[in-house]
Length: 575
Image 1 (cartoon, rainbow, N blue to C red):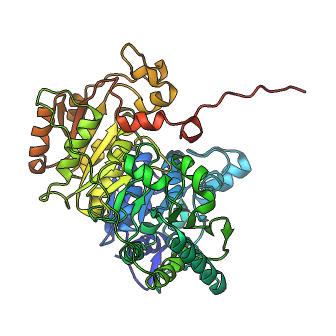
Image 2: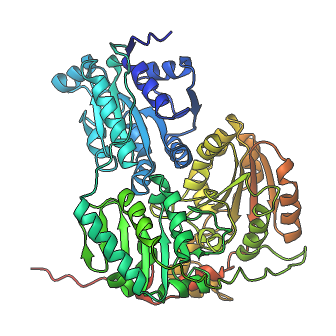
Image 3: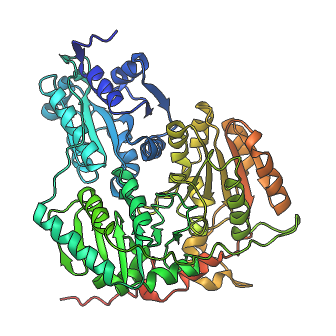
């Protein structure tokens, strides 16, 4: 039993994680980590959630933190933490606060490795290797070797995580876990920097004037609004100004998308044509909390000098930069300034085009699948019960066209773009929200992390995973050669994928397996989905040469605006 006046290092860390909001810790066991895992199992209010591999733990913790506000994973040193690295990098890029807990050889073994050149298991030979690697994708990477200073190091790392909304790495050597230290005291909170008052006032005045002069301003909202708890200010800005808003793909559903001023999710040419035209023709794009990726090359090329952009690390109006101004301070100040300005008349934003009505015998295409699933998740009886999770695949750009979703009901790792994140994150999303994940994965991405279906089964998570089975990396092929999708065209050999028996795979993992090839089968499955309990894996058979119109527009755009443009290699001159 934990003594709250005096505890072990393992207990201290577990208590602190629980205090900041972690209820589930995603784990893969290892001998170095065993003392910490024992504490998790004994401490009320914390639950150890097992994963099949470390990357799955990282993805699950990431999905959990996107909704819970914080997440945690515990894995073994070396083979575990370095396997987890890809997930941590994605969390870092997309401002997802995840605490990575690891453990390494004890003090005596470290002396042997250093003095006698004995390589202990999972070590590279450099006992600081994991810390040095993790420093590149975390805001704090600490190694705790004794009880002395352990509470301070843990508190500082977790405070930096809460402040920056980015991952931290906490490694505890095996012999330090059971050492005693003072129990936690006080509350850990974010410690944000304050803006410079003069710079803030000038930035707000410049933004107010630029918006007042603009004929077609548009808000371009980003994920930092959600990560830093600023959505209320964004909504009030829309309400006060009458200016329409769009979002990045990463920030889709940062606000409720059923409201009249939602103009669609902006993803360049892949967007609904109205959305694309609205943003590209705007004379004042107001980018707030956005992570600008190479999906937005065309926008940056056309609008950089007229754009208002305020995000972590940058505040500018046009080409004038304002140092020491934070997004958290800028938003309420801008709202106050805009509330004194005349409200604009709401533009007539067209709704989504009417969906086709395919026959039951019609083959499933990306577009038809999107229309059927989109209509399903917008049904009144299920609208607030599902979270859509999209992989970095064709479907991400297709489902980006969806209108009407409630706030915080869509997940896509659209900035980092790691294939497999969608399936891997589903367990964390389910545990954080209590809602049902509806995952749409490309077959290539699913193949990378398929064993996490077993983790979903083990946790009895009520997830539905739809795998778009077209036997190829369609999104990659589109940027290599669009002609491959024409009659008689062929995919590049490196974009081909093997055929899997998904039904047998589901059975092996203990999940329900289903297969749909015709629209009638898909509609029947969706109608019955609310009544199905437990993980369901659905193979959605899609013709290999089906080209979604969103992907066709994106890949067919001018080369200078392409996300994955291929450049001719310059000839090297040897001296």
